[in-house]
Length: 152
Image: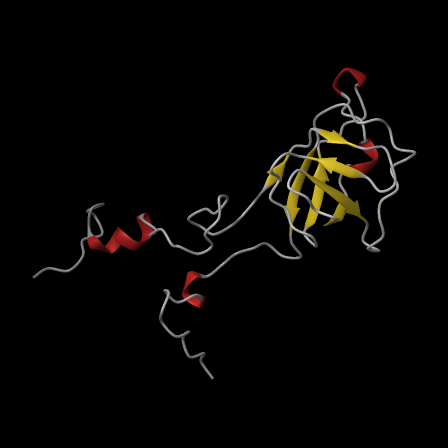
């Protein structure tokens, strides 16, 4: 019996490198085989009020999530999205409903948008974390099995 042949692309030597088995964790609509999750939400409306309320149908966010805002454009005026004051900032999501959420600042107080420019369209909210959500499936045993014993 011969060993793996590095010159043969179908060799068992490359089986693990070329394929990644699908895993049941995390089991969500935005999971990827690499388990790096990115959820981007484009709003349909944003109130110019205190607090700022964002409407985004079926956004899937939860109270306490952190979002980063991007693509809120001030100039050129032909492409302006409005609410440029939100651009490139981090916010906490609170008072979540199925289609809306409120923005809270890093101080955990509601964002006052009364002096912001009027929202037109566009912009993007990206679900953010203190660190990227990278999940090692080895840390989550299959259902019905005890967790692995950690190394000392």
